[in-house]
Every structure is written in structure tokens, then in C-alpha cells.
Length: 200
Image 1 (cartoon, rainbow, N blue to C red):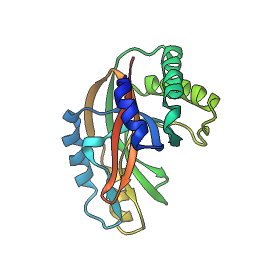
Image 2 (spheres, rainbow, N blue to C red; image 1 turned 90 degrees about the horizontal axis):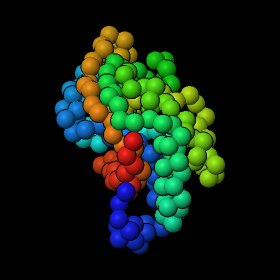
Image 3 (cartoon, one colour; image 1 turned 180 degrees about the horizontal axis):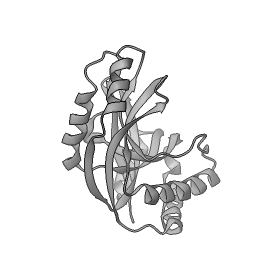
Image 4 (tube, one colour; image 1 turned 90 degrees about the vertical axis):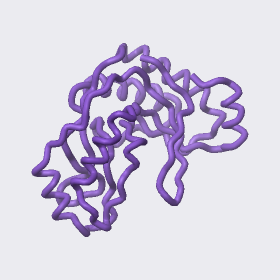
């Protein structure tokens, strides 16, 4: 967990923070993520995520007053205890889309090994954070890493062909913690910063 001094700095700078809970992919996997993004081509409709910021979102909290961070941290610690998940290996690979191949909004690579552990963490985090008044998820949890967002139909046929025809293996990594992160929306895309880290 970060020190109180850093929290004081965060509170001073941000009255409201856009928060989410996630598992970061290590830097060693970033090159593989970038290679898979290259398979999708350069369709003008695609907005790619930064490979070096690749992560699996476990729970999106949204715009949150900074002074709620301590109670969120307590809830996350309770959730990790309840999930009873220790450090585990995860593999990432394959391709998928949301919501469907007929209407593509998000292109992602999925969690294969380790999906069950991430789902248990998600479910525990969901219980604890909804008890604090955060909105519950409206769809089934699918552990994934977002590769790109599709803003219009340009290049849809190419994307569909790649998703249906390719099954890339991104890599394996050891999951040792969950992070509370904040997102700053900038002109070049979102920038993420870790607020707190919770060991499994």
C-alpha cells in the first residue's frame, strides 16, 4: 500500500478520481501485446490501447471522491481475504470482441489459465464494493485485456477476419497482487497510475 504522504498528495491534487481495480500485465508481455495489435492492421476506426499499460480490469469504480480511498482499501483487503486466492500463474491469448462480431466495439485477448482465480477475485470485489454503494456489473465477467476500441465500421471485415482466424499466445505471468488504479483521460489516451497495491 502507498504511504500516507502520497495519499495526502493525491487528495490535494484530485478531489475526484476515476478509479478501477486491476491486475497489471508485466512489462515483459508488452511486446507480445503490441505484436498482436499489429495483426489488426491500421484501420482508421481502431483506437489501440498502450501495450505498456495492459491490464485486466477486475472492477470499475468510476468517478470517486478521493476521501473514499481508505474505505475502498479496507473493502479490497476484505475481498481478497474472502476470495482466498494466493499468487497464481496466468496465461493470456486468443482474440475476442464485445459485444459481437456483427457490432464490434472492443477487441480483446483473453485470460486462459488463471481465469477462475480472477473470477473469484472479481466476485469478492463486486460484493464488497457494491456494499459501499458502487454500481454492480450489468454483464457477466470475462477476464480480458483490451487491445483496441473500434469507433466506427471502417475496417470491420479485416478485424473480423483476424479475430476468427488467429489465436495468438501473448504469454504467461505470475499474479501476485491487485491494484487500485486511477485513470486520467488525456488527448493521447488514458494514463493509469497505481494508488494502492494489495498482495495476494
